[in-house]
Image: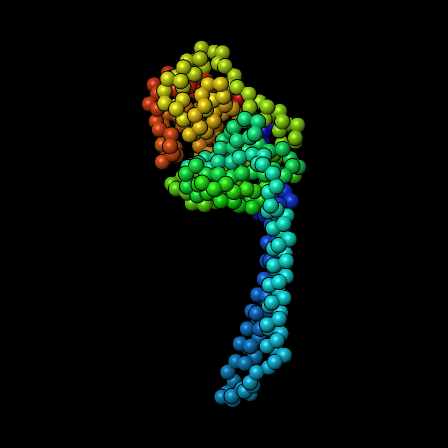
Length: 310
Ligand code: CUA
């Protein structure tokens, strides 16, 4: 299924977890807004009412028990109210995890790896079934990153050496955009996340296809492209199911199905893929993919092969 646009309304929510967070934000905003108006109103009243009019000294008073009790108890009550609202939101948005993860997301400089128990592995595009709360384990391969898809739920740090968990759920099929939310180096801005939520049946079909070996090349250029992939440095970092198993770099088994390259930095089209392979550093400076220095012929063969990976 193709999803080209996402719901980009501010504070749009598409899961019970995100809805709880946005409701908490809105309640807090209203409560704090009312307090702000009361304080500003009283300050404005005092400035106006007690402005200098002659030299008369105002009446001096000392202590007011009723007032002191009120301005102690009312703020305590407001804080307790906010605490209750926050606890209720946390119970919905971030309940304890009670089972093994349904999905593992590994953050890398600068891309996301998604690993499914079925063996399917993908990068930067995370497929999930709708209407099911998934337990997602978030890991990091290098530095601290932060996984965040605002329409679906809370942020969570990806910490090297420590697994963290979140719940990920989408009410409706669609594309949900997210990004790394913790500065993690030069290309932090290009660590985009595309969550693709599909009806459970469509998700199962996708997952089975993603877990299957990559289709073998049939045309002559694609066959030469695969030979080049095997002969050059590509095979040392990239996995293609049935061809190679390295996992330093994004799994390419279904590369041609993805919408973007370099975690969102360019669109995934044959022309852009060729531009990327020619010199990744020109497009995403500092990324860990070197220039393989392929000849123009080898380049178009490799593109021909990679375009069959769907
Ligand atoms: Cu990864 Cu910022």
